Length: 191
Length: 101
Image (cartoon, rainbow over the protein chains, first blue to last red):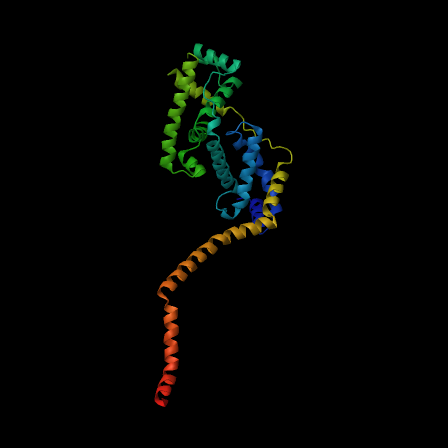
C-alpha cells in the first residue's frame, strides 16, 4: 500500500486525529463518485459520504493493511450506500407515467428504429437512472456493480460482504426485477 | 427481443455516465469538525452513560440480595449457628453451675 496512507493511518491510530484529514481530501472524490451512483439529492449524497468517513475513522483500527486503504474504504462506502438504499425503499417511484419529453421522444425513436436511439444521449441516461430508482435495494446494488461497473461475482462478494451464492441469487432476482420494470415501461409506452 | 435490446442499450447508457467526484468546498473540514465533536463528548453525557450502565448490575444485585434475605428469614441458618456457638461457649459454664448447685 502507499506509504503516505499507512503513515497517516498509524498517526491517527496513535491519537493524532488531524492526520485523518489528508485521507479525506485524497479519497473523497472517489467516495463522492460512488455515493452519486446510489443517491440523487445532493444533501443525501453529502450525508452518505460524511457517514462513510465517520465510520472509517471509528473502524480504522480494524484496517489490517494487507490490502490498499482505498479497497477497504470502498467496501465501507458500498455497504453504507446499500444501507441508505434499504432505508429509502419507500421513496421509489411507482410508475413511468411522468417521463420527460426527451425520454418519451427517445423511447419512441427506439420503438421505431433502435439504431436511431443511441445510448449516449442524455435521455437514455435519464431513463436508466429512473429505472434504477425503481429497483429494490439489493437489485439496484447488484445491477450497478455487475452490469454497469462490470465487476465479477467474486469482487461483488468482497465489496458487499455477501457470499458468492447469495450474489448469484440476488443477481438472478435483480435481472428478473429489471425485466419486469422494463416490461411495464414497454407496456406503458407501447413498445 | 426488443426489450432485451432496450435493456442492453440502457445499460450501455449507464456506462457512459461519467463518474462525478465533485467534492463540496471545505467538506474535509466539516467532517473533521464532526469527528472532533464526536471525540469529545460532554461530561454530563459520560456521567449519564456510566450511571445507566451501572443501573442494570445494581438492580440485579438488589434482586439477588432480596431473594437471599427472604430465604434466610424462612430457614434462619444464621440464628441456628448463633445458638450453637452460644451453647458451645456456655456448655462449660453450665456444667460448672450445675456442679455448684
